[in-house]
Length: 319
Image (cartoon, rainbow, N blue to C red; front, top):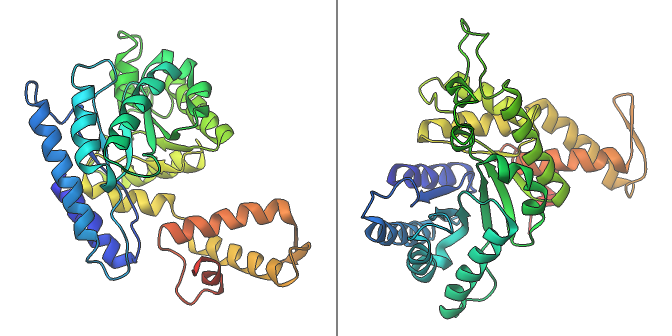
């Protein structure tokens, strides 16, 4: 956790914006019997990261979240009381694991809001949820539509484990070049269906779909290839990492290419100059339907610090 926070600070200074979130984990990170102490540590780390980001001249505030225990775990309430109570103002969101229903979300939101109000904070804390079981996938449209949900993530390993051996262990990883016949996380039908259902539900509800981890963290080329596939073939706009070394390959895969950014800038700037009427660029007609797409390319370029400082489209992101 400390290494990830340090890398976040480093890249924020380098790129001038916070380019990835750090999620401090209480669910799998806390030792059995040490949940309370672990929650206090997470709260302290979140506050420290928030204060440290204030020293970055460009004002790139740290994006730090916390993953608490599931709502039916004995430590859920104490996690919320400690972390939201002591460090809620330093968090960008709270991650809820093993959400299986709207009722789970309602229970969690009630607990979070109670602690949030007791701390006399304004607004509310965003909620991200992990979809990790066949039942959750079956109900994912309703979960995604919940007004407090900002993003859904796919919990691959728990999803595979929930099938009682019906899905092979290979589906939790990536197939190597010499084992193409194995089912991996990108070709097992049940896993693929779950990924697509989650992504589609998020886009339908205007929420952010976040792809699962790749455990092969030593093979950075494989990480980047998987991230690009998650983005381009499965419609995910974010992705989890399990090691700081995976951050840069994931950012690279989810960032638009230089030629895409150049084209998007040319189209959007030209369209604005004639009040968004139809235009022709490089022999192709563009109108408001395609403007929407190319604007999203510019947004992604800006969010991943790929939009050049001298690019005329920078004017859209000033002030």
